[in-house]
Image (tube, rainbow, N blue to C red; front, side, top):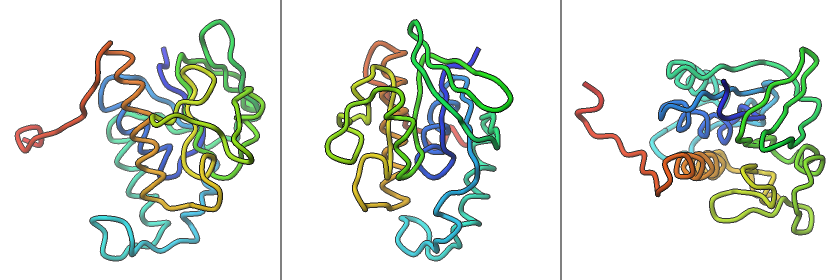
Length: 183
């Protein structure tokens, strides 16, 4: 059973996927690989001196797939909330899960279809990136007007994932690794 559906495989979506899958939640990402990152070069991403955006995406995908995230290169044609689950539709069918993370850049159409509240032109979220629809999260360019930065988007995805993990644990969840974890 899938626990988390993520629509969008840029920095926000992949960051959320990394956190959730790494911590035991089965995670599926739907992505068309049309991220703005293919037009970017990173000089302002902490820990990276200089990296082409497409290379960054390749490395990021490899990392999340290494943890077991299932990435489908498909367009999501619709999303609904039904009986405590979210249903994502593609040309190949439907997939459901109790949590949904929208990471579609400035495309806010799925959030609108889902019935999320907006603050002007952006999706209204709380500090954990949760929308007005319980257990649905919006990240990155969806929640900020004209403020599109990979590192901010990745942080949004991490915040959404930590909130999901906290709900699952029933208490505040910390994803903190130590050097011993790498052995």
